[in-house]
Length: 324
Image 1 (tube, rainbow, N blue to C red):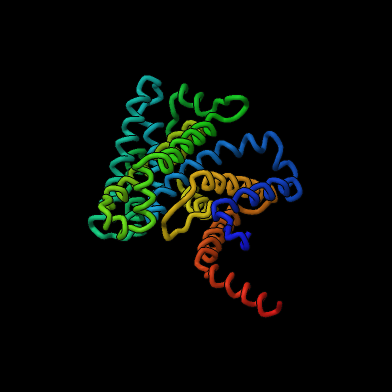
Image 2: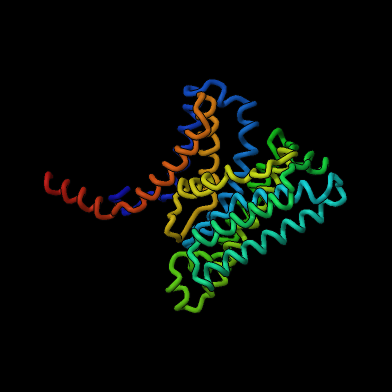
């Protein structure tokens, strides 16, 4: 491929890795590829994918969102507590969740773009605030979502969890907007180079704030769906999704330095992590091992991205030419 001047896409590597993982899963942990195992894994993989798609938007704009856990947990608590178990009050709860997500996204975006706060500090502070709101609003007590919503979140279509179809729908919408619309192409251009985008008249600040708003919407959606699926969500239900959201983006080939990204590859990264976590737990390893693997993936992904691949290829070609 190098002789033809072609380079493999960084977004394609996740798929052979995922295929290999599923192929060796039964060898590492018997039953990890059975029907019941997959049925139990896919809903949580779908939630991870939705969160990762939101994180992807932020990372494409050279940012990082650490408010994932707070947004998810507050969304889950609102949709469980606000209706008071009554189905006819669910719409009001969902509207509250939407308002919360928009407000969080705007505050994050404004703090980062207009006030100059670094993404790490701004979103970490927001997560701390949201954690406090969760504890105050819930009173430290869990609640149960309305029955009809729980039935929806736990339902299946063609034997597959409805959460998977929601994640696929979000994937299709995001991929279409980013690749086929003017707004999406401008968004990608701003992420690839904000100075160049500003020079040609693109609204950099608007795109960056929009990324945080859209990302918060993804986290809130994931929190709502997770609440419905578990029926009685915990107060820290979103804590387990921060690291996987970043790892899935890295596995999908997107650089943490920003620029172009692939929603499809990001979803592939979420599927890989979910199956890997299932295998690790089935082998009897502690949950902490799963977190260590995710952290290692992020570090490895960043390290591989920073390697001077072009220079290494040139040196290899020169060495081959010298020995020919």
